[in-house]
Length: 171
Image (tube, helix red, strand yellow):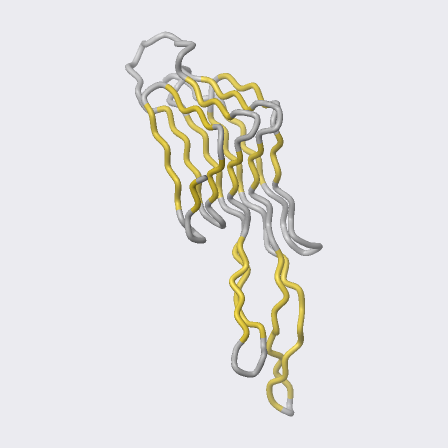
């Protein structure tokens, strides 16, 4: 398992193969998996791939930073879900996400004490703050997606995640 602090980045780059059978976790951060090596005019090679095994987890869910102050008020912030990017240049690689694998950019929620201004001064109202989900961006020429993609909003007023599927085009 590899885990960053909130907002961190995990980047795996390879010339031909990335095989993942564990967990990469970057709360409210970025996970980048890139196949980089390519020479213009090179044909498709079946040994160029990103392979997510059945127990692999790419986790970039949101994150709640909370802390109680001296008066017992819960303060903090809710960070939206992060990004998962799986890329290969042009049309030279493929992505396999086996059944059981998970890519998750869901939002999270937290209970915070929110200041309320009134004529009598400042008071606090305890409320649940829901965070937006993030983005999964898959840019590969060939994909077999048998795993689970999650991008749930954390509450009623939060936004759900985005899934971007694109096929690189040779120019």
